[in-house]
Amino acid sequence: MTGPAAFADPSALRNCWHPVAFSAELTDKPAHADLLGEPLVLWRGAGGQPRASQDLCVHRGTALSLGWVNGDQLVCPYHGWRYGADGRCVAIPQLEDPARVPAKAKIPAFRCQERYGLIWVALDEPRWPLPEVPELENGDWAVLTAGPYRWACDAARQVENFTDLGHFPWVHPGLLGDPDRPVVPRHEVRTDEHVLHYTITRPEAPNSEDFPVFGNETAGPPERISRYELHLPYTIALRLGWGGERGMVYFFASQPVGTEQCAGYVVIGRNYNLDQPDRVLQEFEDTIFGQDQVVVESQRPDRVPFDLAAELHLKFDAVAVAYRKAMRSCGLTRS
Ligand code: FES
Ligand SMILES: [Fe+2]
Image (cartoon, rainbow, N blue to C red; front, side, top):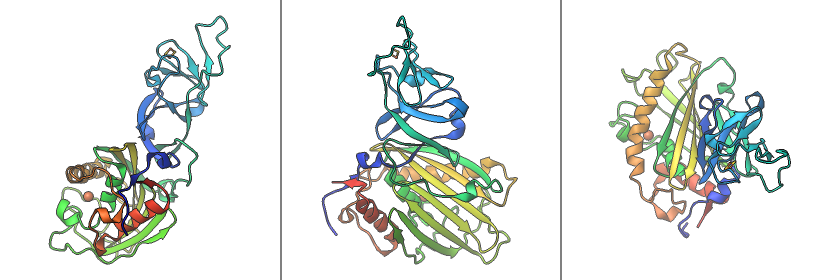
């Protein structure tokens, strides 16, 4: 299949949920985030509800993220105008009657929700709900976060790297792969509208001594089963199992900060090693993502070209091929 060069379409991506911050980082102070080139102010209103609006006061263009929260209102730091959750200005202190606010005094407010330890924003009506990952919400699994990993490439490059099976022995020898076993196990990708499903079974690589993070010590045969769900555009739920009770979930979502900038958020759940300090896995992830970053930031173009003719794909690149096809058929790319 050939066609004109196609890249992710920022306007189509407005209709998807994207992570913009870790929940724990959004406290009582407003915070700034960028999503698809839109400057956002994130804040918590009544009852700690997360809110997102444009980070630009309609009066003089001041960043509202420099302001503060008062009850369920966001206060501009320059002249104290107050905005509600819907973006409407509700008070202008300079007026005799501060409540006589002109109808034009409002800023765009966006859909915002909090789930899996992340704050999510959709700039326009979302096409699909967030993936379901009950392991991260059932309370019995230990859950931790790592990142965000801010890379100079588009979110699709970062996601594709997470799904790329052929690089493990080369980029992560001894941690995720073994240079003596570079062959990618056979796998098939099933595409279900905007979700790709595939499973990889491979002989287990030993835990590295520095990072004993995987659950293969006592469980079943020495095989690691990795079940992937790639939810378009940029979210992955990866479930690892070793044939026994032990399970691990890697939840990964990349924030399309701009067309050539992204931030990757990792949320990991596991039902073993419950007492292991979080920093063991966090340092493991920092190492892995650091190894990947150098390689991925060198890729050109810095955005995934969704046209299949633009790069060379072999059979073991089935996921990359399926991802490109699905992004195109779901209308998330443009030429
Ligand atoms: S710039 Fe925000 S109130 Fe004036
Ligand atoms: Fe990697």
